[in-house]
Amino acid sequence: MPLVTMRQLLDEAAKGGYGVGAFNVNNMEQIQAIMEAAKETSSPVIIQASRGARQYAQDRYLYHLMLAAAELYPEIPIAMHQDHGNSFETCKSAIELGFTSVMMDGSLKTDGKTPTDFEENVEVTRRVVDFAHERGVTVEGEIGVLGGIEDGHGAGGTGLEHVTDPDQAVEFAERTGVDALAIAIGTSHGAYKFSKKPDGSVLKMDILIEIHKRLPKTHLVMHGSSSVPKDLQEIVNKYGGHLKETWGVPVEEIQLGIRHGVRKINVDTDNRLAITGAIRKVFAESPEKFDPRDYMKPARDAMHKLVAERMTQFGQAGHAGDYVQKSVASMAEGYRDGSLSTQPLVAGR
Ligand SMILES: [Zn+2]
Image (tube, rainbow, N blue to C red):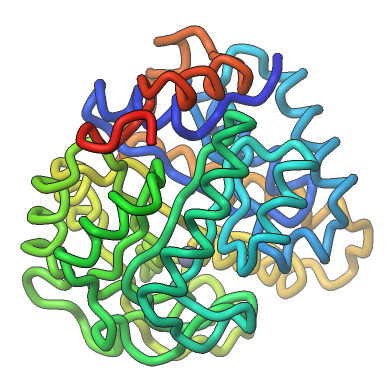
């Protein structure tokens, strides 16, 4: 079973009114955890790799692990996505490797830290869209700058310094033709998103709602959307960890976003915490153990449990069998004839 494009997966999510979690992976156990959760909940799934993950695991390992997942779970639509591509070259190499979706994060320069200006972002994203769509591959862009740093990527700061301007979001989508758009509405990467318990609405939901109204066919993406649950923080700290008290994005806020056009939700920190907590527990309780399987298996199980819970909360559960997967070639045809354009005024641009 070939990998599905993220565009098709998100178009189906829009029809069904649900969101799809995009979970980061670096190794076999994380891929196994996601696939078991997808099977258990019958969910379509986005598996994503950052530049850091591609370096850590090496491209060929990652790609063949993904093919193994597609072979072992033919009933599950799987999109393979490059998370935070920092340049045209990064995205091009991902597409040539076989990724069915790429994010061109042109909101930051190639150093992954310094914010760009609007024109620079449009130019590099448009270049990636032209290259990707010709090959049927999906593109996610980003407008506005997220807070925090993860995997060495990010502008730092709180999530409220560069909140997306709706006028810019509309112009950006029209001029680039991206399939999906990451917007900054107060979220941050990493574990330390909010330093006090959020009261009421923590996200700039009015901005999200306005952007969705004006760009109904462009799928919105929420980054930095781990919920950083208290119980996971407590497990890590109980067994010798030192996490400072922190709060993430409440699941209810994400569900509100999903009702207003959010189709892709990026989750990484929660899985990191689940894995680390499980490993620490084995080390603390059974110091005599030294077979890596003795702690990798509980770690994998902890991530599986968390991913299955998110799949249910985002609404993707039960939707794996809804549709027949389209090939990248037929997606490329759709971009050529304009039927996949998200911008009716410039169809077939
Ligand atoms: Zn991100």
